[in-house]
Length: 108
Length: 121
Image 1 (tube, each protein chain N blue to C red):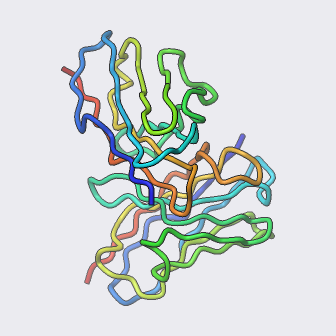
Image 2: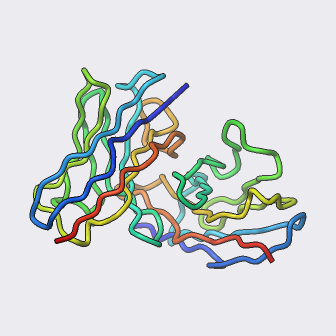
């Protein structure tokens, strides 16, 4: 099973600043990585797939990068609606598909 | 518009059985894998398994193999998650979600609203 490790667990950032979330895979997942956003009481929402492709309707301030075992989600200028929990997910080697443990992005 | 609509919240007792559902619309239901994801209270996302409605090919996470059954009824465009014997530790929110690419297990691009299952004596 591929283990996905996110860092940090919690990130405190001020509105308008940049936020960066990291995700490391225990073995190569090539570019088969997605990012999701989850707000309290809501289902997760797909942000990024194939490591760097924004999903339909996702603002350009969200970007993804990386390959193999190291990945990054960057939010260039935080808006109030971006404060949420973010998860990475690999779909290269399954079953099982695996998620990271989540990163909580909170207002500083 | 792609939509996945899940059945409503359930409150059950330990030892009881349960089947929850996920109805797809707005796309060709048989062409996309549908997965199930568990989220225990205050915790992260756990992938349980996935089914291809076209031929009912089903794969499970080792953590959930033998604990649940995933099935589908193509005629109703509906996927199911079934427990024979619930435990208190099955208390969680359960999401269904559709794979983003036809015929491939991939990212999950559309999610149901979730079904809250509470198991308590």
